[in-house]
Image (cartoon, rainbow, N blue to C red; front, side, top):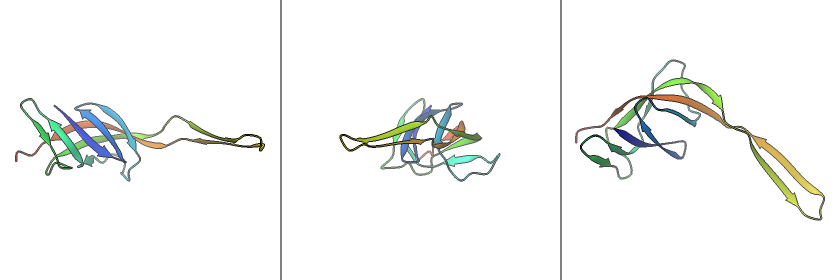
Length: 106
């Protein structure tokens, strides 16, 4: 069983016990995270496709902590102008472990 979810403007394919890194959400320590924007869900018998989301379906995750992503360098340069700019960025991420995928029986 797996599902395709949307969070933070990105889509993730998740299955039970997967660990994913998603954009930072407002979550309290130790509380379960419920992701309800499920685009597609597949169980052993059938595939459920939403338009755009499935109603009554969600993915329950366990919060494992905050992490920072890899550094991304943005380098801007203009030739013959002696102008250059180097900027680094590290995104704040949440580390989540998928506990269960709930699919409604509609």
